Amino acid sequence: MEIAVFQDASGKTESIVEPGIIKVYAGSKGTWKITKEIIFRIDNITGIKEIRGNIIKMAEELGNCKVFVGREIKGMTYNILDGMGFNTWELEGNPMELLEFVFEKEMVEAKLIKLERLDDLKPIIQKVKDGHYYVNLRKIQKNNESFTSKSILIPFLITTIFYQLEIICGHIPPWFNSEFEKLNLKMETTHISQSEIKVMVYPDICKE
Image 1 (tube, rainbow, N blue to C red):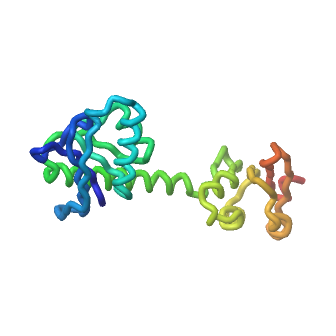
Image 2 (image 1 turned 90 degrees about the vertical axis):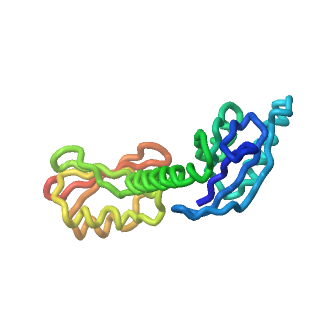
């Protein structure tokens, strides 16, 4: 992981509105080395456009490093860094005492984000009430194109007893007719909009 720390002349974290130097540390768990140093100051610039330009240039120079630590990071600098995908930390002290803390917090946050994304991508067929289910194929496949309609629906259709399954899709998958016939299922389709179709699936015996 790379962590950029804005420091004063004594080596402690500094407010972004004061002159200082940005040192980029690369490593993890007690092993850190400085890979880049950038002298940075905006306290001597009066024009908003020039200040903004300097901040953006500095952020671009950090390359793949998206973690920024300073004693104080506010206003335009915070907004620009946040908009460019940085995680910012306001901490006071010596960088070597802070790197481990930031590293651990970043790792925890990364794991949480990963779990949230996995949960969002999970092809869950929701139970509305007993025997009634719902699935939005469009939403699932938009988030992850590796999920096919067959991989989502077939396991459910062959293992679950249900009275009604509502499917939202962008188009009717070509395998529906043949597979539904094999599984003794019927369907009714309704065009919700130009890009969405609602398919209601029932066991044939229930439909009749």
